[in-house]
Length: 372
Image (tube, rainbow, N blue to C red; front, top):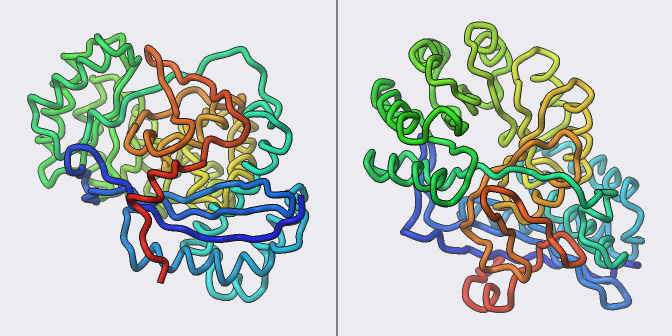
């Protein structure tokens, strides 16, 4: 399992319907900035981070993979997981210029590729390689029906159909409009459409300040929301803790946290109830597991944020005991050799060896972007 080469790549995969909007972002393509790692015996592993398909920043991530991490990995044994993770994460020159952000996203791509290699070498899907049993189910809630850019009538009908026709046990609706009453009206309409038996979560993508969140929560508490995701600015531990004390609506967050230390700060402050780590933001699977274990030790549920659109996270969700559910955003599944699958609101376990992270040849042919 000696590493022969580490090569980055960039794919910009289109989102059906021309794109989406939430309170903070407008996205038309999903960026897959990946690492292809080959061993001396010809085994290939793929890993990637998810971006908003912004070529200048994607090139910086790819450059980190090529110029920072590849020289540290070539010649190493791909099986040496903890030592390799630490070698990259504690490399002094990189510590000096960034312990989060683009260097971490690049580390995520490399770490996932290494885990993909190990599982392929063992001939097992990643969830089983990690020690998962074949029993148990992980529910899928539908995020793709709830974007802020969706008109009210389409939003309500889409959420209703997701629950009644497609079998999803719940949906998530984006909030964060300039006028809180706009979002309250939309969320109330969705609750009426899906009934009380389905779960309903909301997601603010860090847009509002604390007074606005308090106003929203006071009016929304009767709607029995499963959680309020990213209500405030991502790094505001104190604000999230204050909101968690002031409302009966549970707080969810994690997609914008880059280190296990950041998660510990929120959990220790009582600022989060639903923990949402993301392997594409953290430094890969290795650190994701540490965060999930820390949440589990505090008896907090883990609901992964699927910045990889579920390709890796489904393995972690069906394996880790703290996982309860995971979001369904099927934007890029068709461009992978083993697409993630949901049936009647339940995530299906991947069957092929590896982490389900190998893009198709057609994806490379149609959507590859130049690294430099």
